[in-house]
Image (cartoon, rainbow, N blue to C red; front, side, top):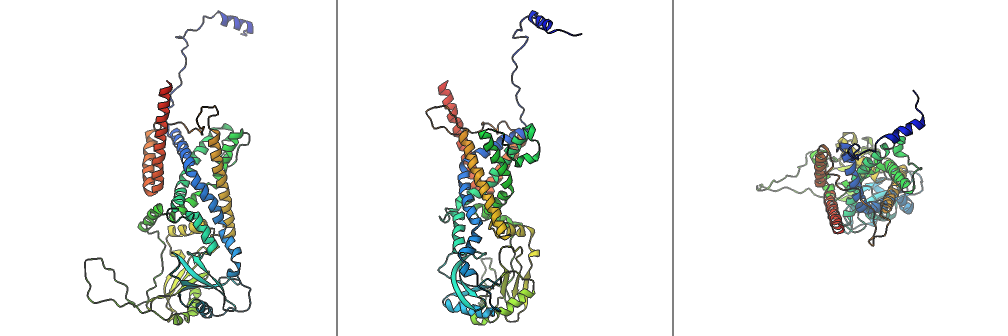
Length: 498
């Protein structure tokens, strides 16, 4: 049966008016706490506070890190006269090159030599200089074709960084402030992965709540249809997704160089046998040094091995180098001279762009025999991964492409941080209140509304991370104190207004 529009209106008009009892006002249903909602709320609040207070340190680390990423290339351009020569005939014997370098530094102790790795490269002859700092040595650069020194410089670390790269390295590590300055980089590295993972949770939730953006591809693509703040949020999240894998790796490797977290990481690696192995330099038949556990006196005395004339050792270098190359040490290598008569030469591959292995051998200079061998294939897996991660962090794993990738990631991270502060600024109240207007924080009480099944593991994880990474733990307590203070201030203000 069909009912006309007029009949319908008349019938509705004849009905008695509804009473409050018949149609009570619906009350909003109380949302049941779930693990998903609780995780999002916790991640949002953590991402906000850490982003506001720690992001300045990360921003400085990103800017200096961008410069650090391309420092190997800058070094090769600025120090080209020390690092390269014109090819010309057959190289002179290694011993002749070393003697030429020793003549320029007669008062220093010969430590090692790094033969020219390429046809246009110089040979580095390394000396121990007591006037230099930790991990620094004096290097004399020699033309391998003429055995003539072309200059000398201070080099730093296992990669042999020259002063420019060393200056950039220290700028990135401690802002040239020494040990106190290292706290900035440790704070940045320690919080970077926490902020990134919290941001991942927030961004995934935001994208999944939009029915038109159910595909995972939307995590990497900004929605340009949004308004001004919406576009900023979308670019912040999508660019963050692109750089996320690399910044997680940089955060992990950066913490290995830190003061407090780095010490805990070193202890953990030692307990799990993940440390970098080394070759044994003691010659067969030599007496190993005794380890006194304390409380016991040993009869007799231990003879200290005599030192050897450097000229005698230099004469053995060419044979040692040939033996090493015949035993699979074929990449650019450094030959370390033995300090005592009962020690062997150590020939170890250098940390160079495009070098993925660090094979090493110990060789008796007198007989030319291999006394110990350490192939990179025999390293523990975690030691290999740590070495590759550090080389990647330094921009040396696969050369210029590695450096350009790091530069792009640092630029991307800088834009993410700047957009994060822009989002915070746009959240501020716009009405005039007579007080400075700052961006509003997410709603408080996230932990109280969180399911216990999530809250307990989260608190346990926070305690574990806070103990293992002390700067995260201390700053997390500071964030909690600030949050409580803000809550108390808001309650006091509400009470006075009421």
